[in-house]
Image (cartoon, rainbow, N blue to C red):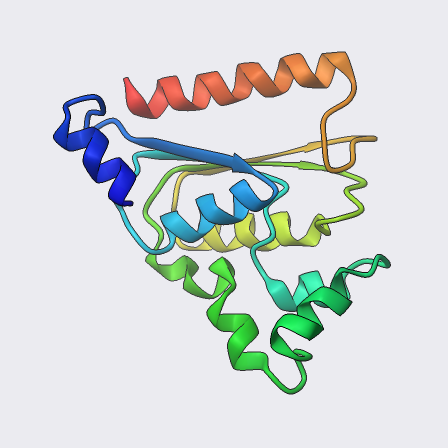
Length: 161
């Protein structure tokens, strides 16, 4: 946020037209930011881990071992998992958010995208969600890549112009 402040102070960024977006960990940072500040006018999150308890138990790879080493298991450290999960702060969000996710993402279970999307909808926050069939943690199919770019640009145009 200090970097954003610096860009605003330098008049490089317009504080009334700030957007944020990211993919994977960048998606996490995007959802964290929009659940902790209202300064962004539009957000785009792709493949964003938003709930670390689901991340711990939601897929077959070894990422649960990393989280267990970092924080312990969610059964013993639930408060720590919740404290680091943007989903548990979603009630603070006011930012229109576009959520994008690959249907077969092996690293971030798609249920996290649905969880965040449904929470934003329930709170009345402007949101859209797109699931790309046959895509994992990245977008490989050319038609999906084009669709992705068009949607992101349209979302930012809609809220930042």
